[in-house]
Length: 201
Image (cartoon, rainbow, N blue to C red; front, side, top):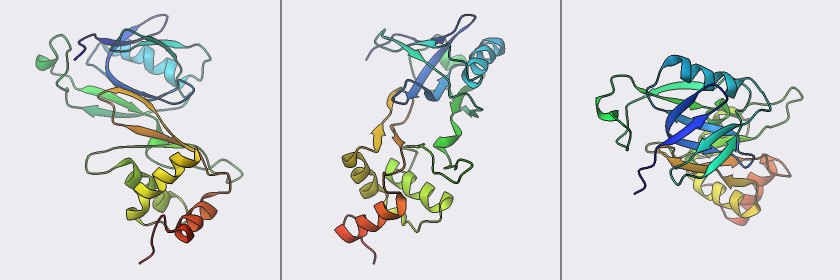
């Protein structure tokens, strides 16, 4: 197991991280930040939500450097228990880790003309990425989707190329970037039923 400490840094601050998820354009979708001085965390947060074209540097556990960008809007801030990883004094840390999660990983939104947007699904406790996909489609769109269809729809979307794996490491769960299907979700779901990819009981 590699014990190199992972970091994200900009021109003014550097923070220790335990995990991350990046999309195909190296934009941060999820970032787990270790307990650190609030000013350091604030500097990275400000860079992520500013929409600035300036990239930050993320050093992963292999020592590879990724030039990364924030998504340019507010991230959901989720306190987390300190994970069991190789971090100095992590076992004695009283503060909690902070997970920054891009909102499109928890809900599907639409553009002003009602156009569907890209969103993200993750593997959560007791929920596969496929079930997360089905749950978000059922809740946030008008399309009828059963939770049991999720894994099959995710697999079919991967085969067709509009669902792509995120780059993840450390404490980040596995995740996927989900683009709207070329012919729209109703056509994709209808075709999946016709082909027997999913079944209506």
